[in-house]
Length: 334
Image (cartoon, rainbow, N blue to C red; front, side, top):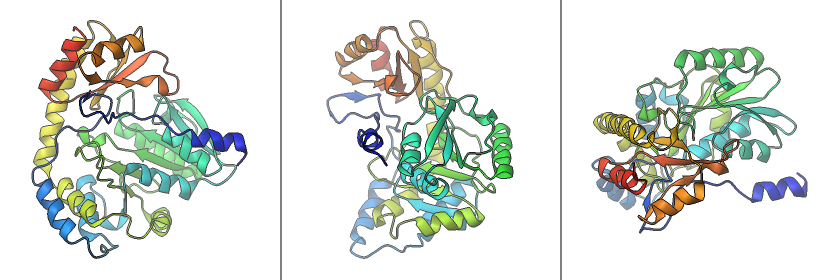
């Protein structure tokens, strides 16, 4: 890797989330609520953390399999969704390969491809599932897409995955936000790698728990490449607990759906608001800095979405609790 490429990678990728506890953070898309009993489960697991975890992670893998309807043996535990993405990219991409990558979308996809010596080939996010995957080692799809918010039709994704398999391209489907919808996962489909995160749906970004799902030889490659003891004992225990909280997930989906509709209606009076199936909304605004100043005066943070490829005057706002959303709407005078 030449020095220019290395410098570009070392520059990193911009993400949401603000560390200032005085700010109400709408820049990160994590659930503001966590499942009941999480603290209790964490405390018990911490007491057991004096020993190495069972590297088979049977409870965690079974809970994940129940959540996405796949075989437990196809689940590969990882310390977060990004680790699952890195594992998939490393298994598929070699130096000199190309990978189809959506834009605007999560910038880590392109970074991970470049880390493996590959070259990302950008396609508009809404057209990528219709692109020709032949000749590419990997094709990445994010559903719902971050930061635009729309989820792709399941049959459209399945058809794309089938075309990828026919030409020897690995499709990587990032489902970090799919749990906020009632759409089925592609987990367990032949030739597909699914990446999942517990960060968003369960409101636990600091836990660092996620997983990949892949079948057959591809799954074997991911399991072989996965670091031993990829999850700490507390992360594995809390993850298994959270993934079995069906009532919590159902309540979260309903709250997000209702609040997203309400927020979009109010925000549309002032901004162009992108349609969304996700726990966030993308707004086209005339002046990003002016909007940031408006909300910061009310001790609120929003995401400057200009850091996403192809977006030049946008902000992204999370869908939080009704009371918190009211604060944002009031700060924006809508």
